[in-house]
Length: 234
Image (cartoon, rainbow, N blue to C red; front, side, top):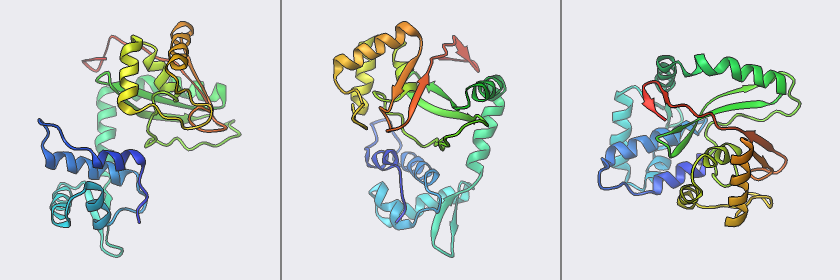
């Protein structure tokens, strides 16, 4: 059975809104599901996670295959993403030149700190997306820069850094929409504790997460505010 992220499983169980084209929604669920699975997924896996019958799943997969986004390994009867998905991402990064501007600074920070340094973008002021990661060569602890990792807003340093830039009422609304979760005994779940943490982050200009997302792991994050990027307002 294919191993999937909790985010992918939950997304596949969500119901589309009134303005959503269901087939497009489901096609994206398939792409996101396959992106997190190293050995691909069977037709049964995909149909189950979409909560549809196999006939619908077959049509969706056939369309994605014709577009060159998915391929089927006939030996094991499992579906995988093609590298056209990666190509699209690389083309976007080349067009907006995000990494041209940020990668050198990330490399310097990684080498000087000897730690894993990651860059995330807040898109449409409501979603955090991992973009790039650089590991320092002097690191003694190796941590996989997992881009599929879902950012838990109340525990992750990158999320705290972002939430500290807005009124607490809006930050709380975003956290409640996702769900305030306790990932470790150190996770802050009480509203007063979260409020105090975000106020400290706003005052000092950086966020700290010490074993709040994972035991034995600490992180520091700072928000970088820009008026515009690649022609769009941030």
